[in-house]
Image 1 (cartoon, rainbow, N blue to C red):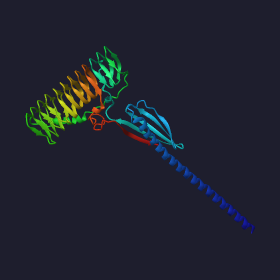
Image 2 (image 1 turned 45 degrees about the horizontal axis):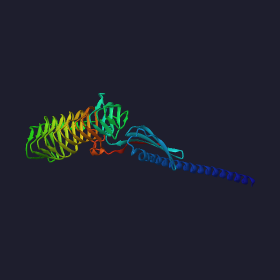
Image 3 (image 1 turned 180 degrees about the vertical axis):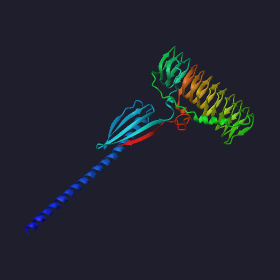
Image 4 (image 1 turned 120 degrees about the vertical axis):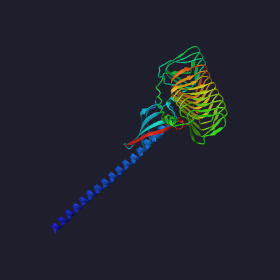
Length: 412
């Protein structure tokens, strides 16, 4: 009997030990799952804090800031933890942000490349000149600049020239006679413009197609009706009228518009030779000219809104010409001889402005030949074209600045 009682006691003790161990294991498993669940929960909350840090930085520090190069990182407590923001790289309109959210010792990190979309930085100035030839710029007579002016070199302002409502950025500035400048600062490098001519090269490839005759019309109306027409050369004169939409291609020779002839809205001109706009001829809106040779706009010519002139040669405006849109001569000169008014963007190798020329908008060029005789330049983004011209980064996008997320990576 005592043996049976001893055996029962041993069995009872065994089961107590077993159940005790099972209880410890169950409690450990439940506790471990709770810890893992809490870590997962805090990881999710840390991610949301990192994202909140990014959104906060965009709204509070970047959206309304025109220059990100002087921004600094920061930390901010936000229940249930905090986030830190670090600038891994920064420039005027581009930066790489690292935003880390931390909750209960668990951290999640987002790395984001942001860019302020819009035109290249050079168009943040009334005139931006990279001065690759290292020449001294003379601003003379009664010329006036309203807005910031960037010149990578020496500037001498003479006579009664003046800079108002802005800053002259240059290597040095000398004021002579009664010249005046609102403020001066040494230059900080502006990112060079990257211009790609592929779009215009593709258009000029149309001039390799065959044409059997020249177009020379002196009267009557020609309706393009959305088509593309090829001629060896094109002359529209007298009181002739060409209506768009559509495209005219001069495969070997020149394009000439003169007398009282008219080109309507939405016409594309592709010219192998030179292009001439003369006398009291007129053109409609959205005129796109791509010319292998030089372009000459003379004698009271008015080119209305959203037009684009591109040439591998020089583009010259003379005698009270008026242009609204974008003028691009990446390897040539843009010159105003007398009383031209530009509204929009100028981009070229060399810029020459004189004799009561007015530019309302912005110019970005490699060098300036002359800047004199009552020339007035006013930085005015309201005169920019509605979309970025082909050839610049972001072509076709709005010229109004906005934020773009270029890259996004996440790490635990």
